[in-house]
Image (cartoon, rainbow, N blue to C red; front, side):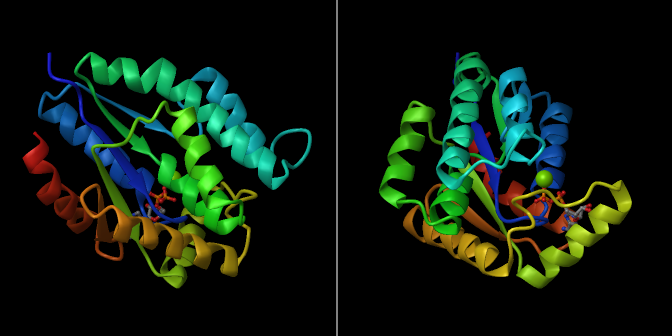
Amino acid sequence: MARGRFITFEGGEGCGKSTQTRRLGAALERMGVKSIVTREPGGTPLAESVRRLLKGEGPEEPCDRCELLLFLAARAQLVERVIRPALEAGTWVVSDRFSDSTYAYQGCGRGLPLDFVSAADAFACASLRPDATFLLDLPPEAAAARMRGRESATGVGADRIELAGDAFHARIREGFAELARREPERIITIDASLAPDEVEAAIWSHLKPLL
Ligand SMILES: Nc1ncnc2c1ncn2[C@@H]1O[C@H](COP(=O)(O)OP(=O)(O)O)[C@@H](O)[C@H]1O
Ligand SMILES: [Mg+2]
C-alpha cells in the first residue's frame, strides 16, 4: 500500500492556517482520499492536555525551555500515536502547524539555541518530515486585523503566545522565511493576503502532482 502524504500548514497568528487545514481536509474527503486533520499542539488526549498548559490555562507560566520541551513532548505523542500509523495505513495527514513552528517560535522567537531546537525536534518526531509544507505569509498589520476579527466573531481572546509582542512576531516571520529559503523543495510560500478561495487554489496548484 502506498504511504499517505503528510501536509503541514505553517505561518504566524491569523494567517489562515486553520481555515486552509479545514478546507484541504474537506476537499480530500470529497475526492475520496482517505485523510485525517490534526493540529499542534494537540491531536491526542495527552497532547491536548499539554496544549492547555501551553496556552496559559495551567497552574503557572512555562519558562522558555519548559515551553520548548512541552511542545516537543506533545509532538512526540502525536507522531507516535496518530501521524505515523495513519501514513503507514495509506491515510493522508494534514496538520495545522508542525516542526517549523517550533524552529520559528521557540528558536527564532524565544531565542533558544537553533541547533539544539532542530536536533531535539528531530528526536521528538523520530525524524518524520512533511512531504509538503504551505507557509502562509501575511504582513503583521493584516494578521492583527484578522485576529481582532476572529476574536469578535468567536469571543475567544488571544492566548499567551499570541500576545507576545511585535518584535517577537517579526522574528517568527523571518524565521519561517529563512526555513523556506533553506528548503525550497518542501516549503511553498503562499501569499496569505489573498481571499480564502485564492489561497486554496494556490495550494492545490502545488498539491496536484502529489496525488
Ligand atoms: N484568506 C483570508 N482572507 C481573509 N480572512 C481570512 C482568510 N483566511 C482566514 N481568514 C479569517 O482570519 C481569521 C484567522 O484565520 P485562521 O484560519 O483562524 O488563522 P490561523 O489558524 O492561522 O491563526 C479568521 O477569522 C478567518 O475566518
Ligand atoms: Mg489556528
